[in-house]
Image (tube, rainbow, N blue to C red; front, side, top):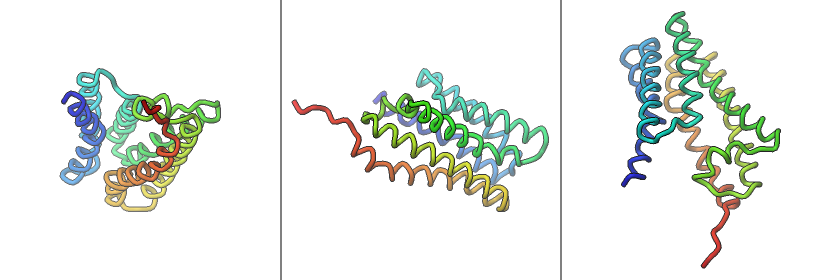
Length: 186
């Protein structure tokens, strides 16, 4: 039961701030949603720390970027700072993963090895794919916030990025299956 509860906590920590952002936007606009997502991300980090006894690296990065760019948005009243947040987070993740590969290390393996057991070739391929995927999302976010009305960007941020993540992860299942380390039969 404990593991199932932790799965729900992990899911709530990951998508809770996104749901809060979208709902707050629908009721109060960008400034209200920016403040709400800042508070929700702090709460998510606190819940993660209390229940899971750790704050995952991706949540740390998101927390810092949300607070900095959300703060800039609230202080200046300009949404562009918050529009750039997904670009910066995704570009940073991409640079870290691809930079690690360039240096001969699969940093994704360090983050996900407790959930997946892959051979080294599988970790390299998966890391490359994630790095390129994050770069693509960063570019796509820039295109959408710079060319589309705010409402379109909000929908993209709330549903488009999440949907693309789900599709991308599902598309990686064949690679994971090919490179999964099999336990020897007893």
